[in-house]
Amino acid sequence: MDELRLTDFYYNVSGDRARELLFLYGSKGEFLIRPSESNPFDHTISIHRGNRVTHVKLSGKGGIHRLPTGQEFINLCALVQHLMETPNLLCEKDGVFIEVTKPVKIPAPESVVNIGQDRFFHIAINGLEAEELLSDEPNGTFLIRESTSVPGEYALSVKNDDSTLHVRIYHDDNKFRIVPKDNFRSLTELIENYKKTPMVQYTGTVVKLKQPLLSTKFTAASVDDRIEALIRTAKKPNARDGIAEEFDKIHHDKSCSLYVSCKEGRRPENVRKNRYRNVVPFDHTRIKLRPLDSESESSEFSDYINANLVKVLSNVPCYSEFSGVGKRYISTQGCLQHTISDFWHMIWQENVRIIVMTTKETERGRLKCSVYWPEKGEEHRYGQNHEFRVRLTKEESKGEYVIRQLELAYLQKGESIPTAVRHIFHYQFLAWEDNGCPSDAVLTFMDEINRVAVPRCPPDCGPMLVHCSAGIGRTGTYIVLDIIIAKIKQIGPHCAVDIPKTVRMVREQRATMVQTEAQYRFIYYAISTYMKMWRKEHALNEISAALPPPTVPNDDPDDELESNEEEYESEEDSDGS
Image (cartoon, rainbow, N blue to C red):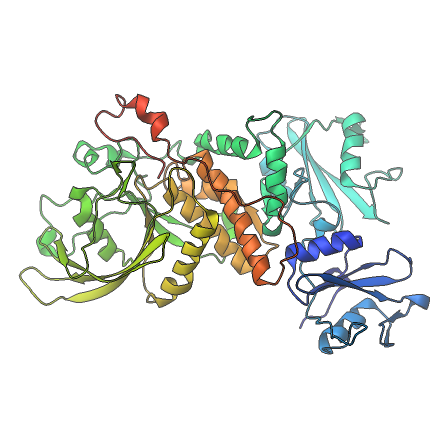
């Protein structure tokens, strides 16, 4: 193990805040050390016990740190190292041992702000990123972030005279200051002071703080606090809250598609292959069908299918925070009867082994997707020369979803024996109804796919294919949530989550992904539900939920679009699925 530093385990927080942070970020056996609230020379170790937190006093008399067992140490690092190397050292009065494993990993700012609630504070950004965030904002817009040059201190970044100014915030003796005379107990106090009394630089320039740039980033553990903060912004009952405002900002942001071509999907010969006239793929990420053999290459062959490759763009600087999340998807529409052969062509060409279907075949009497798989005991042939043979080998109902195992075989023209056979997992989610979708059901569905199907796919398999009806609403919601959950699993509860940024990333690859406000809101509540499940798994059943995990309101905008039937001629309107 690397040499311990004080910053690895020491937090200047109260006992109540220590308990809250351990419940948010920790698991059984993890701990932190904090100042004693009863004696300025002593410290306290707060230990996660599964369903409670135990606080143990550490004497500091004479500058020597002592455990209750009598051992003495010259510094806290040595004490903590000894605790970790000596299991069962601490015990209750009744002799029950207290498990101590490792320091809990908590974002440093949590000791001075509530990351979920205090939206003026931006986690995990540097000065250049702050300048980028403030570049299009009016003068007087500001944010606070961690200092990247001095650990434990902070920086105020403010738009002033059309440029960004960075001001150091000193943090010592549990107080905050910009100039020596300052003596603020919190960053909020400091901000309120300088909003009333502008700063004056030594050059005489006046720096005014007018409005904070509200952060969209939070830690996974603080999701309930962030939801509460966003909902609280609604001034009146039934008014639009912060979640709705975030979605509106994304939905009206044309930068994702302003200079993006969609010509292929609008060609007259391809229009009939689109389920909805207003949902067409971007040209730069669309899946292009290729002839499978020389006989397939004819004047009738078309490379068009309404599908896009969507992946985590961690190689793009603004999305580097997704590094390590190597997710790839094909996002596509529900099959039309005359596009089923193209669908199976794409499955074979892209070596897809998992299909995720987030719609029923028919909902509210409207066809959402033509059935593209056979019944048990049957086989269907597809393709220009009937080269694809599809069989259903297994079907299992899990209540809210159905798992199918399909056999996809490729046969050369005139041959009866397949050249190759592949096995495809088909997962169909049935519970995404108009009256909402239970977040725990989606997470169970997603976990089944990632835990069971993904490990059974060959190493060279292609992207996971996700579709609904239009291939943008439920499909986009599923993909965004899958990416975020994968990142949380990789990093832990202190993982930084930015829902708007994740939605923008996938919207750069297929238009209007996460189509409705209800779907966007669902992502927040699904992450909340996931963190509750995580805490339960880590024996964290004592923490109270800030909000219940509600179902999502109607996510199907058919009703809103029915008045636009003339615009879409005889085509069905995009249904938010």
